[in-house]
Length: 316
Image (tube, rainbow, N blue to C red; front, top):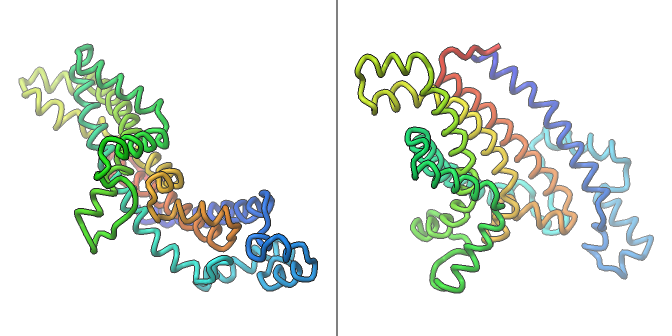
């Protein structure tokens, strides 16, 4: 296992290089101009001023040279300074990252609490009313985009429950209950959509496992229904679910941009969107690097959890 982990971490290097270079190149071809954002239209039209600003920012050199120079600074732990705000990029990311991680963790907990029990119940009660209800919920959850659900929650709360805290963020150490009250709604928004997908994975997996020979043998031995389902069937049924959780956790990390802006949460998603609007290249590049690393580590942890759940899995 240790060799497998080391190999996966080494493979992470070319992946991060590819992602960061694509980001580095693409953000420079999108419409907009950093000089105009910083100096205004009048100053930006002055060629001498424009050349001076680009030279001071290091943007007058060829793209590949800029990228290599940026990589050299990253290796030394220097993520640069914001073009717009002036402060160190790493400080802004470290303030926003815990907020995004908290939201992602709560979202996945809610998704599992929604998806796994309903999926098991739907499979066990196949063809009964609870099965149809769960399947309709899963279809609605998959079909409705998370930003649509989030917008509905904000509007409904503002109209019918004006005192309900749906927007903004309160640090956990400052007010734990206030923090959870505000993080509940964005986490639920993510949790509904991902929980609906996990429900479908769980239902199909449990149905498949319940048809296996060893389950029929366990029933023939007279084991209780509870033991057959939760001791013998569920562990094997959760293996594809764990893989799905890893994939959708990675998706959720990248999908925080919309949700954090809808609920006014100062996380990484909102940070990177503001940086894109202002053409703040150092923040965009560093944020993409952190998010890409987080996605890769999430997928690695999902693979390791599959091995824990199923000892037959061999690391090649």
